[in-house]
Length: 197
Image (cartoon, rainbow, N blue to C red; front, side, top):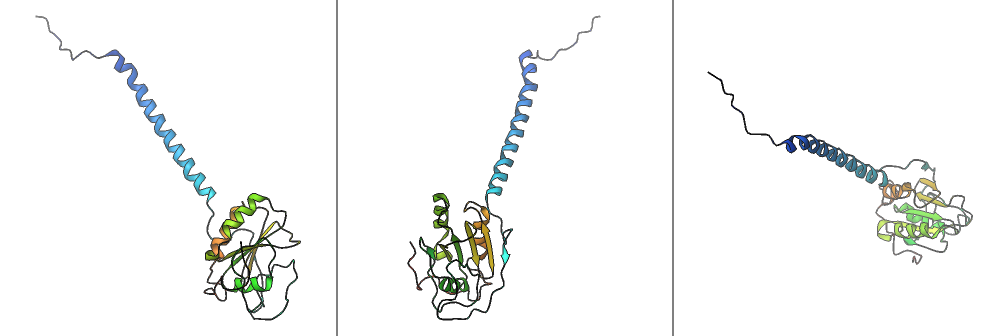
């Protein structure tokens, strides 16, 4: 008696040949997707300013926030606090120099002052214009003979920068504009002197 072996359905030879490749392609596609996702996340993270006080920020010892009449500072000075005018400077962007005595009063109210040299590139000036907003308590103005192209100042703090594209500019503004560490953080940044653009 001859034994018969039962055979299953015939296998398609093309299915066997392509099956491992489909699996490999699917795995490779998944790996590529994960790598691209990581690149997008890391690139986005690197372009965003980090929080806190930016690296390179100097803490400046300042005097009491007393109101004083008259000229207190030279045209090239960028004080980070101390005595100042009884009238604050309005926040916004200025294309002409403004009196530091008035700006220091704005700093007392929690404003950030961005000063820049007259030869700053147009692209950097545009970035400063976007930063200098009254509602955000930020003002920007040129200062004669300033050593750094850009200096960012808050009450008791200062940071020198070579470019407005440095992410530390936005980080400084974010950290100090409206800061509760200023002597009068609830003070106004409009209704004072100056006509920003």
